[in-house]
Each structure stands twice: as structure tokens, then as C-alpha cells.
Length: 173
Image (cartoon, rainbow, N blue to C red; front, side):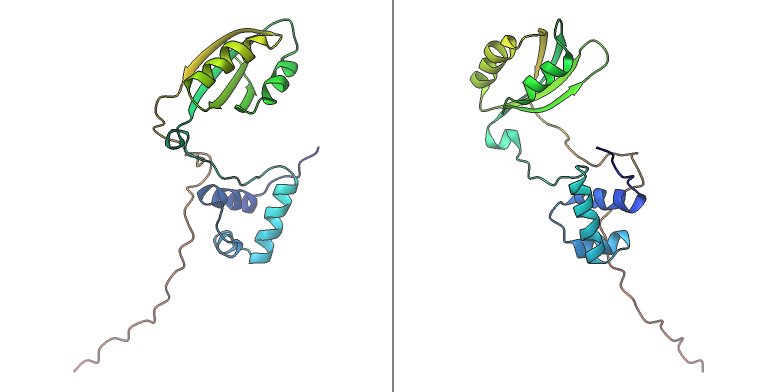
């Protein structure tokens, strides 16, 4: 699928959704310099193109889940075949091909340590082509943000400016 280019206004709109995906199109439009209808139209275009999706995410630690990062080496099978097989598992939230010591980077989320162990030792190791796995369990998340410093200009919420009347100077005398 050919993606239409994303312009600076689209990028500002995306940044506003990163801050708060529940924000109204009116508020987003005011920040990016569009009407509510134009902001909604751009949002719908970005969703239709698969560039943007707004989702709710729970904090794994607060709900008692266990997260882990897996680094995999693949041999004898096309990388894409292994990646698609992994992506089909409900525990897998992220699969990416990688350069370096590992071929795939995978994030998983399980109910508890027993579920994680079963996933890694039973199901993952049975996937044809998985040669080796390095597992790093997440103990504590210290920072999780989807606003990337240095990605673009700093992102802030729209704050309406209060207009005040100029104060007339006091009469002399």
C-alpha cells in the first residue's frame, strides 16, 4: 500500500493524540490550526491509511501481568515465517526484525511467571526455525512514554491565551 506523505500538521495531530488519545477534535484542531471538522477528517485519513491507531493500554504491573523481552536467532526458515508465527500468539504484543546479534525482537505479556515459562519453554521453542532465545523479564518499568524527545519540536497541550485589555495610563497631575 502506498502511503500518502504526512505533513507537519499531521505530525502535530499525531503528537496531540500521543499526549491524550481521548482529546476532542476541537481541542486538537485549535492546537494544530485547523477546524474541528478538518482535524477529524485528517485523523480519519491517518486511521484509514494505517498510520495511526488510538488504543487503551493497561499497566502490566498494576494488573498483575508479567512482561518480557525476547531476543531470537532464526535458522533454516525464512525470518518472515517465524515472525508471522510469533505474531499469531495472543501473548505477543510486538515483533520486529533486528540487526545485530539477534534476528527478531519480541515483547510478550503473560498472566504470571508460570504462563511466561510455559510460553517460552513449550510453545516458543516448538516454532520451527527458532534457534536460540534470550529472555529478559521486566521487573519494573521506570519510564514508558510515546513522546520521543528530539523527534520533533517539543509537544505541549493547547492552552488558550487569555486576552486582556490594555490598561490606560493613569492621568498625570
